[in-house]
Length: 204
Image 1 (tube, helix red, strand yellow):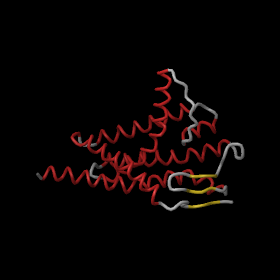
Image 2 (cartoon, rainbow, N blue to C red; image 1 turned 90 degrees about the horizontal axis):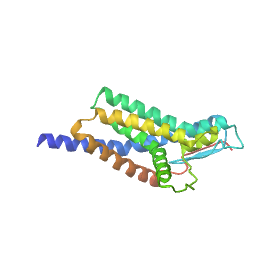
Image 3 (tube, rainbow, N blue to C red; image 1 turned 120 degrees about the vertical axis):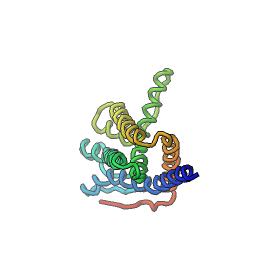
Image 4 (cartoon, rainbow, N blue to C red; image 1 turned 60 degrees about the vertical axis):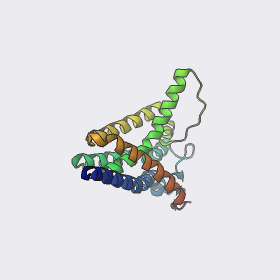
């Protein structure tokens, strides 16, 4: 009975922390984008889940555009790696597991896009989409294939995720993973609906 109570207590703690920390990782991710217009004086707005304005192709140097677009994923990778490292040192740091899992979830956009492209390639169907996610825009700005950044993002996600799962208790890996996934989705929806918009404005 005590062991069952401990398991439920651990899951509920993880669920609550993931739900609370997900908006924090979203804001830090977006601040990674917002830093470029903030420091360069370009007009931009920081929204709850995105940044509008700032550096744009055709008006600013490509490297500045790539820096702004890549700032979010860079912060995501730093957060994921830091959280994973903290959890690896002490599995009682449930907050670190929640923080790392919430952070790296944003890399799944690239993974989903990559999976879709490969699926369409296998079945011989054309792809006519106009993707608008961070890693794709970085590739566009730098003039190379978006497959490169999508594969890189997928590998980083897989590496940090495997690191986290490998350090979870074996009997709780599936439950922990499902709990985090559900809470990340719920927190994303909740944050987008309750956060003030815009969060900040710069330049102009």
